[in-house]
Image (tube, rainbow, N blue to C red):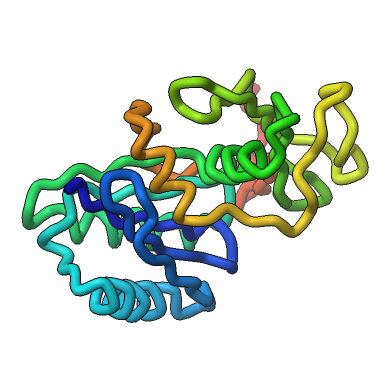
Length: 208
């Protein structure tokens, strides 16, 4: 029985899930406050104890890697890597937005595509187009886009956007892992506008 612990910390409404052979066994919501590390480890202990499982029994750790809150993503990736190290188990990652897209498409079977978006900063949003995939449930079409907040709902004509405020869940991170899709890069996806940082010291005068 393939046992997986899934983590999704790309938003303040974080979550954990246990899956066996691709089936969700238990889930746990986590309040991702400024004490993210403590909340994560306490919630994982409670979730595992409730299922009578132990970390050493895990066959893999599945982590949503964003886009989203950089600190939450780093905490969840670091925790998963720390748990996996003693047993040499793999840490598998997927875009958190893909998990939300898969959940959205599962809820409405009439949809073929959906746009997932989230807050960036300085009046911008990030957005990505996702489509049904017969093998992997969902696949991303094209690259991420950084758009003005006023552009929310525009673009990709005829494709609905996920409702503002919806968040991805660890259960769907785990379900995507169960499809056998390749792992994404094991690092946070962090999309934001570039920030120009002025030099600390004035440039020297030009020489003759």
